[in-house]
Image (cartoon, rainbow, N blue to C red; front, top):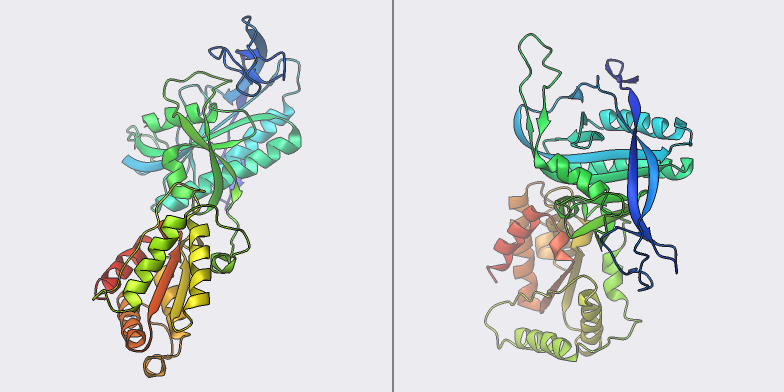
Length: 407
């Protein structure tokens, strides 16, 4: 029994279900792989043709489990983040660790506003359908991280998969409580279960759709889906493993770091220098926006470091304003507000005297930023650098597009 806020309570019972696991084990390094794999992907040794078998007990909600326990989903179709929780143990192992983890999963999911149901494989599922999809996804990942940490402490095998997509919540039957739903359906739930078994236990695994939502807030890395524990047809070729919350770093200070030498990129560096020279000399009648686009880790920020280091040596008569999109993505307009603050720190007394504080609305902030840019443009060349702009909030991007289009 999990009782929350003095009124909401959820009672769930779990029962073991015997199962078998089939796999191949590398005789050279001991790594385990799905039966369809012929060569070890760790050491390239040929795997033994004979499959290995392991008898396990899966702990799943009992048959009298009621779908919709917890906080009910909105009726109809809603965008939902789905967390699948599965755990198993050996047939001779104690069931206390697995049952304790599942009870903790129920408690955490309901406390975070999740709706409980079961997936196609009978495993526990929690659906998070907040009005803000970012909040629902964040709550699901935080719940999964807490469960992962508990499973590591107890030495139990736990599978955690998260997927985001549409879910259908069926209407309650006549004469029943509206708090109990007759069914929660959708492929999103099945995909969540497939993602949970895509890699190994003890990991928080998210689908590409969830990764795109949580990436600004959590450290993740991509990997392929060997599926050594179960075989699903709907597993994405690439899934993402969540390491933990993204650490807040000073991206502005990172742009000042030029200790590491730039390998190659001489052509790109020369192009940036040429664009700047054409702009500051007046050969270009309007301002210029340059996008640095590339795969993660391709060296975009490193190229910016080298470019800014070069400008500091050859051009001291300029105003440089820096911002980092990776610091944002939460409150709408945060990047725009930060740029306004940075411009106000510059020597523009005629404009600074007009405003004693930053305006609260995006429209007024954008209008102020236009005035600041126009004031500076009369005196000195201005360079605005935004690192990792793809992580910035959309409201700021739209406002900055209108501001920059006037120059």
